[in-house]
Length: 90
Image (cartoon, rainbow, N blue to C red; front, side, top):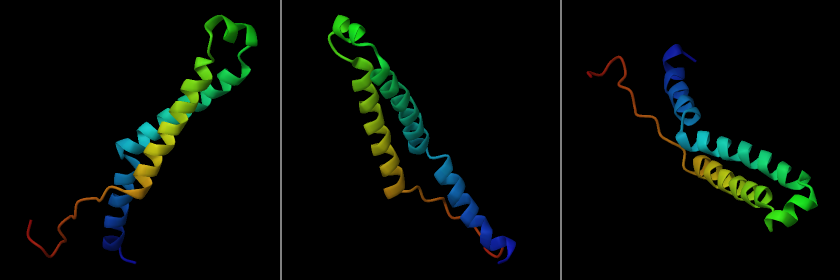
């Protein structure tokens, strides 16, 4: 493989890495895991005071949203713009 053939592949990979959907999916997944774990370790006395385990439910919702965003990013990836080659005029 020549150096020119790896250029488009690298730009496509960079476009996928910096896709905002990927960043949002990871952020929601991380916060969702933290809140879900906190929801499971919350003492029952605190749950009875508030009436609902909001950490658990919001964590599960955030996890679901993170999975949806991640699936969207995987199913419909961004396409990097085609760069003109050395033999074409820009």
